[in-house]
Image (cartoon, rainbow, N blue to C red; front, side, top):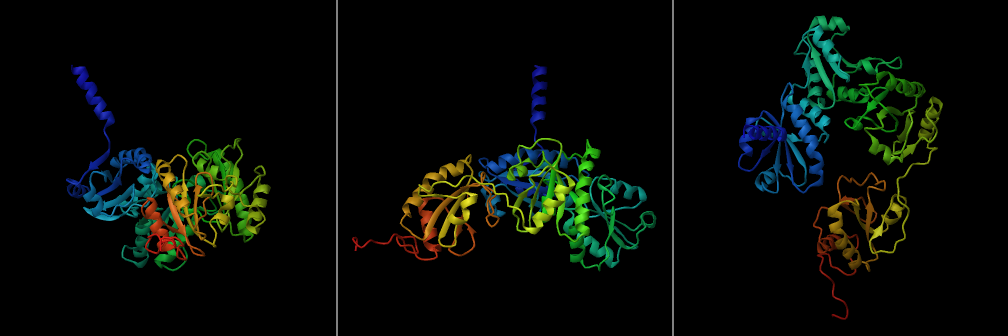
Length: 487
């Protein structure tokens, strides 16, 4: 009996979650109990919520034991509508940060454990850490991440005040520290300066390990300087910091591992950097990065490089228009330089992920990347669904969408179309983050996301109202026009 009870207790402990469950009855009290808390508003049937769940759980465990603990909680909106409506939840999952019992801000950060931890750590602690001794400074700068340090003579001066404002707004993107200690300033040779420090593992002969800010103290200028310099000549690009890298961008993908293989990782990075330095010195405006081919395998697949093998890097890039390009030659510094110059000069054929152009035999027109501009043209109004073959909601919509297309088959200026967004490149003007996502593109106009109901009559009423020219079979209010025989 004792053994059984012990086993039950052990199983209960093993399955215990560090994510707290809140409901309508206790939400306000629980929020008040925690100085800072991240809340996920979810629905049990939501696929994105299910994918987030294990990452959210990992983050909860890590943040529970952090220097500045952060609580993670969740609310099932299908069972607690009052709370979800109060905070304007309209999609799932929605994440919000609460501080001191009040809504602080919407969470718009990464959705994987490491990114959640990094973002919430920046929200929980001070935006900039005070370095009170040389030992503090050495510890801060020993981390394998970039860091910005402000060296100040006193707390009240304008330099520190503006530095603090920058740190407050950018602490989720960059580590900040400051010091008023004269020994720290003497050790590093700075006085009333703001300095960007590169981590030791990334330091090379191709760029400065320390970069001093030399402009005036306007907050927006300091922020821009940090943004322009925070990844260096050839940064390590990961899932967490993709947005830090600007186009035109060339990325070398290989076994990047700064934990187990620093020497091997820097062997290839140094070759990329040598090319980057040469082009930079020559005035070419192109950015370089390295990425782990394992961590960014999905991105490689978008370039058709999902089956690459071997130790040498594979290279892909994007130009200023976000068009994709693949270096087909084997990696070498000469080939990398030629690829970069050809990309900048517009001498390369863009890579387009696309299914074959299909025969158009159905009422719903099938768009692929290669014929997208033909199907979604400026000559007609177009309603287009972006779907995934595995998506249950898309499968439920399919017969209704087909019925809609058949119902409007005699409307010469309206096209009902669909595209498999997992098998084709989606134009950048269409923001597809879930399935199905539906857009209406008016004749000669810009696309706008459809947010209405998903019954056939909902679509008809919307198109009747939004169509550039009144539909031949429907009035603007969506009511069917009477035929001449009916008159």
